[in-house]
Length: 412
Image (tube, rainbow, N blue to C red; front, top):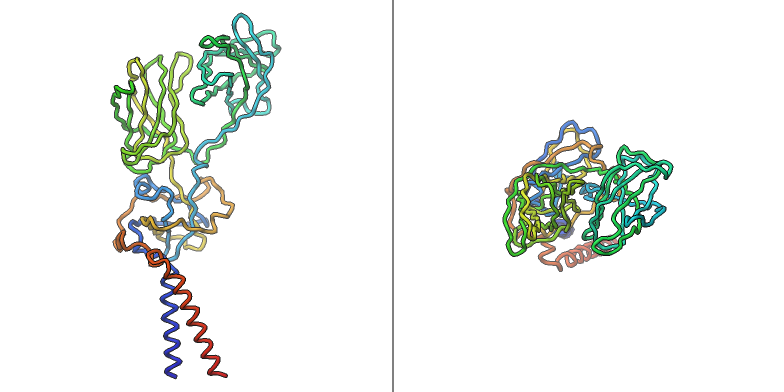
C-alpha cells in the first residue's frame, strides 16, 4: 500500500514540475503593467487604443504584450498599419492628338465619366527623369473651342510625381500644353492617368508641434528638429506653414529614437511659385521620437517656418472579450524582450478593420510591475536551460511507463 502511495506521489510531483516548466508566463517576468476598466461591454470585441506615452515604453512590435482578466489570457490582434495609411492605384488614360504647335507641346485626355470627378487626381509622366514645368490646362466639349482652366505645375523629382485636381470642371476633353524645351531638351508625354485614393480606415490626427531650427553651414541647409517626447512616436507626415511666396527647396527627412542613430525616411521637396504649392511631406508610417528635416537652401536665404503640423497615427489592439462579463478590469503586461509574439485564433478570423465599428477604450497610463524579478531572472527556465524541457518530458514519459508497467504486473 505504501509502495503504491509512494509511486502516485512521485508521479504527481513529476507532473507538477514538468507542467510548471512547460506552461505559463509568470507575471513576474513583465516589467510594466496597466489597468483599463471595461464597463457596459456590448460586443465580443473591443478596440484598445494605446497612448503615445504608454507605447513609448513598449516594443514597437508588441511581441511581449499580454492581456489578462482574472488570470485568463485574452486573444488580441495588433491593428495593421497598412489600414492607417492611404493607398492609391493609378488607372491609365488614353492620350490623343499629341504634337507641337508654336514651340508648345500639347496633348489631350478624356476624363473618366463613370467616376465622381471630385474623387480623382490626375498624374502626368513625361519622358525625362526629372522636370519641373508650368503647364496650361484647357477644356472643350467639341475640340474646336477651348476654354482656359488653370496653370498647373507638373513635376517629377526623386521619383515623386505631382497630382492635380480638376474639381467642378466638367468637359469632355482636357488639353495640357507646356513649353517644348526644358533645360534645352525636348520633353514629351509618356503616359497619363488618374489616381483614386482608397478610403483611409484609420485616419491620423493633425497636431501642431514644437520644433527647433539650426543652420548647417557645411550642407548649406536648415535643420528642423521635432522632439515628440516619447519613443516610437507613430507619424506619417508633416505640413509646413510659411509666409514665403516664391521658393523651391529639396528636403531630406530622417528619424531617430536616441538622436545618435538616424534612419532616412524620405527625400522630397517643397515649393511655392504663385501658381501652386507643395508644403506637405508624406511618408509611410514611421515610429521615431525625433524627426529631423534637412531643408537645403543652397545659396538662398533660409525659409522662415511659422508652424509645423504632424499627422499622428493611433496604435490600436483588437481584443477578444466574448467570454468576459460586461464590467471587468483588463490587465496588461509587457516589458520582457525574451518573449516571442503570441499566436492567437483571432489572427485567422475575418475581422472588420474599421476601428469605428468597435467599442473603444484607451490605455493612458502604466506603472512598474511591483513583482518584476529583474532582467537577469526574467528568462523562462527552459530558455536559460534549453535541454531542460526535452529531458523533463522524457522523464515524465518514462515515469508514466514504469508506473503503468508495475501496476499491470501487480494486477497480473
